[in-house]
Amino acid sequence: MSDERGGGVLQPLHPTGAPLGPPEPVTDLPAAMAARERADQPRWVWACGTTLYPALLRAGVRVQRCHDVELTEALLLGYAGRWGEPRALAAAWARLTGAPVPTDPPPRAAAPPGAGQGALFDATPGPSGPGITALTTVYADQLDRIAVTAQPGRFRLLVAAESAGALIAAEMGAAGLPWRADVHDAVLAELLGEPSPVGGPPRRLAELAARIADAFGVRQVHADSPAELLRAFARAGVDLPNTRAWVLRGVDHPAVPLVLEYKELYRIWTAHGRTWRDAWVRDGRFQPEYVPGGVVSGRWATRGGGALQIPKVIRRAAMADPGWRFVVADAGQLEPRVLAAVSGDARLAAAGATGDLYAALARDAFGGDRGRAKLALLGAMYGQTGGAAVPALAVLRRSYPTALRHVEAAARTGEAGGLVRSWLGRTCPPGTAGLGGGDDGVADPDAGGDAQSPRARAARSRGRFTRNFVIQATAAEWASTLLAVLRVELAGTEAELVFFQHDEVIVHCPAGQAEQVAEVVEQAGQRATTLLFGDTPVRFPLDLSVVECYADAA
Image (cartoon, rainbow, N blue to C red; front, side, top):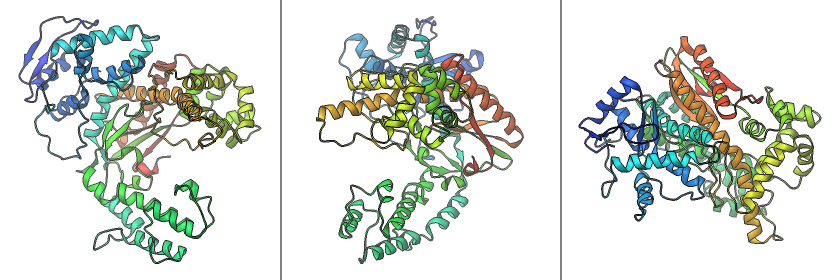
C-alpha cells in the first residue's frame, strides 16, 4: 500500500494469501520495494498498478511480477456474470464485508508526456481507501474464487497475463517509441502542404475542398461535414445512408475520389498532425498511455495518443536510434489459427500447421481459391451467415464441422442470453457492447430486416457478438501471453519493448543484437502457444522484420 508522500506499508504473504508477518510501515516505498526486488523478486500484490507502477518507474524501480487486484476483480466479476460492477479495492472490500459498495473513481485523465507529475504517488480524491488488511483479505478471497472456476489453471494464466500487461503498458509508455519530429514534419508537408497562415486546414485540404465544391457545382462544401456531403450528393441525385468510405466507393460521381482523398488526409491532419506531435512526442519518443484489457475482448486500448491507429504513412517518422534497429513481429492470421486450436478440429488444425492457413484451406476445400476460403472463414467467425456466404459456409461445414460447431454454439448461447468464455476464462458482458479493437471487413448481414422483431434482431446481434468473442478474446490472450513471456526473456538486456498494437509488437535493440532478439521473439511466440494450448499441431508463426523505420516492416 502507498501514500501520496512516497511512503507505504509492506507485508509478506503465504502463497494462499495469508499474512506471514505483521504490516511493516516504510517511509520510502520505492527504496524498500527496490531492495526486496533485488533480494528475491517477489510477486507483488497491489490494489491498482495503473496508478502505482508509473510512479515506481519514475523513481527508478522495475518489478518482475505482480498480482493486480483491480484487474483481477474485473475478470472475476465478469466470470460471475457481473461484468461492469465496481472493481476497485474499496468495492471488493465492501462486497466482502457487506458494506455499501462504492463506485469506482473516474479514470485519470490522459496526461501527455512531460505534463506535471505532482506528488510521487497521487492521492485519490475523496476519503482514503481501505488499508493493508483489506488488500490482503481481498487477495486471499480472489485466490479462492479463482480456484473454483471451471479451469483454474487457465484462469491463473489469464490473471498473470493481465497483471503483466499492466507492467508492460507502463514500461512501454515510459520508454516510448523512437520518433523523428523532423521526419514527421516532412511527411506532413508532403501530404498536406504548407500550414494555413491564418489557421484552419493546410493547403492540400483547402485545394481538395475547392475541387469537391466544383465537382458538385456549388461555391462551397465543408468536406469534413458528413451532413453537408450527404446534402450535396442528394442534390446531385445520389441518396446515401452515410459517407463511410465503403459506401462512397460504390458511387459513380466525380466528387467521390476527391472526397475519399480528403477524408484520409483530414484524418491524418486532425489525429496525427503537428498538434498531436506537440502533445505526445517529447525528447524523441512517442509516449502513449496504454490501457491493457481496455475493451471487452481483452484487447488493449489507449487513453491518449492514438497509438493503435497510426497510419502507415505516419509510421515513417518512427525510426530507430542511430546504431539501433526495430524488431517488428506480427502474428498473421491469428484469429483463424485460434479457432483451429480452441475448437480441436483436426482438419483445420492440420491447415493451421502450415505457413498460410488460407491457402491451405483453399487447397483443402475451395478448389484453390484463397480469397473465397478467407472470406468464408472470416464470415464464419464474424457471423456472415446469409446471402453470398451461404455456399462457402456449406463447404466449411462439410470440411471443418468441429470448428463451425464451436462458433455456432457460442452464437446460440449468446442469442439465448447466456455467457460465453474465452479459452482462459475471460467472460463476455451480458449486454451487446461491441468488441472493439479491429475492423473485420465483413458486412453485417442482419443489420436490417423488418420481418424480425426488435427482440429477435437483438438476439441475433448478440449471437454475432458471442460468436466472435470466443475467438477474439482468446487471440487477445495469446498476444498478452506473448508480451509477458517476451518481457521476461528480454529482462537484463539492452533490448526494450517499445510498442504494441493488437497482434504486433516492436522491440528496440542495438543493431548487432537484432538477429538474436528476433530469435527470442520467435521463441516467445512458441512459448505463448504452448502455455495456452499445450501440445497443439496449430502453429502461430510471427512475421519478423528487422528495420530502421517502422513503416518498412513487412
